[in-house]
Image (cartoon, rainbow, N blue to C red):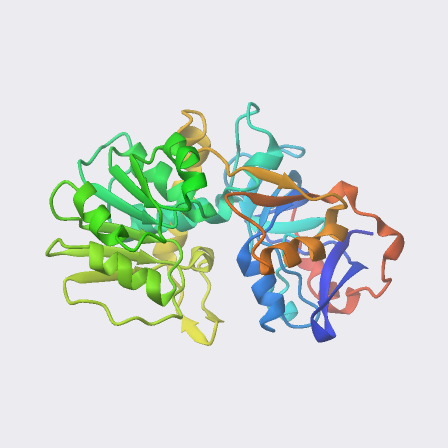
Length: 371
């Protein structure tokens, strides 16, 4: 039977056998090859957001196993796709996270990738690229390439996984990209497209950003979004109608009146209303439609033209068995300018718990569809 890393009482992660997840007429059933780790994964466990019985994990690359009768994209069985799911949801919602052998996702929200890019590299992109794109293109209304705009664009915390994508997307439309990071990351970020890099710890960093900007700075993406970072970014935004994207929507900051804030949260692309982090998020069909358009462009334009490069990969051995160690590394702040990636086939199932979730899914298996 399929396996998954299930959240149990006292925030324990237990390797268990599971039935195949149900899938609907618009969905793909996908066998996961690689999964990548994001901060939201360990936070769901550590802060008790993931209830017992749920599975965390968002980013995956896998092979198509079953295809819903109404699935778009003309996908074939055995074809490789990448995407992300909302891991850590209440198990009653029957949405399985990526730290499992099988996931289900609507066909319009996955993407193909060139054979020249390794799947363990592509798996770093789904969550962070859509987060970056939501801010740059959807909220700020900057154009998709090949259109260009001659504006300055600040990326605070450019070495984060989201930051690396923001740099590349902004550069793809001709922006002059200013970013902040530790000095040892500067050359790497310039290789991704940053025009100038500053040390975020420099006491004069705001003045340096203002000097680097060609006139008034109007666009900024705060990829850290803690209170102090947002204050510094706001101090650098001097244009009359400035726009700021932040990635922690639950942190409220008093902003100057000339700045419009856009709070982005990747989970809105699934088109379902949800209570997240103590807040209610209404259904945002426009976010889902944007994600469908963007992922198609990732497959047909950004990746083939080399405009979006994956994060640097650190593979953690042991498959699902290695995720606890990966969580510890991230909690201890031992991850920098890289993504942790797990190969599901490397999982040692000798420690399997045979506690199955059959009852949880049994009422939904009959609703599955396939070609």
